[in-house]
Length: 352
Image (tube, rainbow, N blue to C red; front, side, top):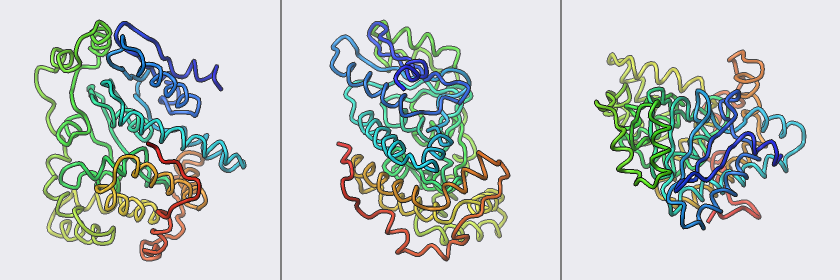
């Protein structure tokens, strides 16, 4: 595993920067346990090196990272290798917590897809630089999973209930919207990413370097920014059924966005939707370690259920796009069922 990870994630000291390249372009840089462990080792080492003033994260190929290697996790869980799956969650969530509390700037250079585990590597760092092809999403409810990797903490803190919208729909947003709501902190042409990395390695301060490489015109906000008032009105309070009722009412008044959004939500796992909505309700009051501990509780139980395996089958394995969720309706997901996902576990990590 160590030798494989050395090829799949490249960690090198370059001047004043610790430079990390996610290097599984054929898999859209999806994260494996070996990659997570190797990055943790590098970050721990660089935290103690006075000559390293910042960390730079980037992805090889056309994606930053599409997330965790869900197919591998699915197969390990199905194959009775639950200890390997548990080790991945513990290691990944501990890495997310380390990034959140890291005392040196972490500059993520993001062009292309950033989803799931890739969001966990970048969103909790200090600087998130969006290239032209930036595409953020947390699409977990579409595969019977839930928005994890610190989404419990981060998404409720986005303005105008945009985080709730992202959690319940899994929709992608581009860099204009990402900048508008704080998912990205800066923009730069992807062609400048290497020059940014070199300037940081030469000891440049991140804010000054990124200011020099900012595009001549700020990226225009996208459809989410245009619909922020509607998103706030529909997603700001209540459970999934209430959100859908508001969207249906807005659709009846002529909103195509509301109609499309409601239709999208109705294709998602009812259990996942209920979990994600409760995460968003609780998350705004949680510390980061508390949020990660909550996610560990949820993921442990999700892997004991039905919808994750069915979602991976429908979307990734058979690709028929017709998951058979169980239960199939929101009405069958009771508050008691949802609460059980959030209950404490024996011997759970603390992520401090």
